[in-house]
Length: 391
Image 1: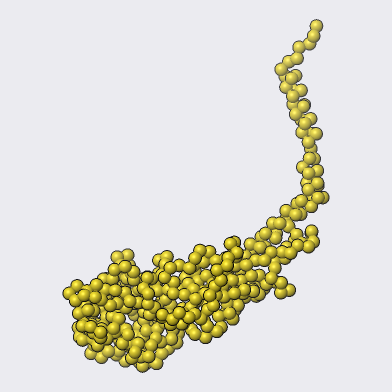
Image 2: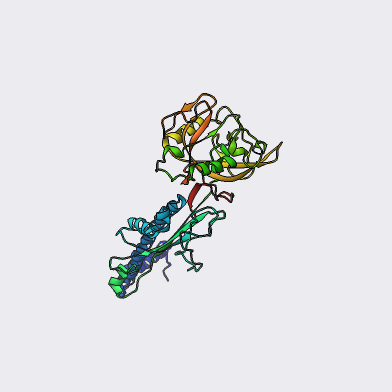
């Protein structure tokens, strides 16, 4: 009589087969690892990881050097430092690019751009950039923003210790031999233009032009300390102004003072937007909001403020136009509420018996000017500048 198989016996046979299968696969991973190791696949993958990582690290180093070089040259040009921008820009770019390299060596391939020495001048202290493009990460990104007054592009590439412009494949070269390596490059673009945010003290265009003629032009950028003869004060009193009335009656300016306070932005009580419609200046007793504190901070630090230069049309209801943005270094003031600080240049009352803000106009970066994504739309350039990396 045939013997019937019980369920427990069948389960035991299944377990034996499964366990036998595992015993047959034991050691398979070791064999596969040995095959990959003997054929060099694992070493090749390791070499690729090391070399790609080295390329990325060098790429970051090159980009940092290009950014530092472009920013340093742009600051020289925006501050109108003639010799540094026109003659020594390549030496400046190499200095900052090398300082960001681990081995202190970077090849500055080119420095180009546009830097006009004077408003309205068509010449440039920098050679024009070529329109040719490699179409990869070695290019600067995007385009030069609109309303840019000037810009600098710096192109760099790796320079190894044996003066080859190549990053060698260290690990893979040691294993496989040969190989030409990778040419690692970077580009940085820095531009400057008129700021779009300023301090709410407006000076009429006629007074500004009169000041330029009287003092011999803009003063060198800080930290240069000008002579006392360069100091100028703009009146806040209701009295005739030869500067504002030149070329037309005082009603065209709308005020009988040389300067006035503007209504600040709602979001910031001591800022004014320098784009779009400009409000009518007023002869208020004090600056709006906490601007007296900022006025004193600017005086004590010597940092220039971006202030609007305005003109107006119409007699009864004048419309104000932004002619330019000036960089003004405050040296002293006497406000109509009795707030007073002597001149940092002379130590004396800047305007005895008057109410005024004293200082001098310069060509400089205005650090308090916020970046709003673009530069101002004014066609004239009166000395105040914002500098930003734009590519």
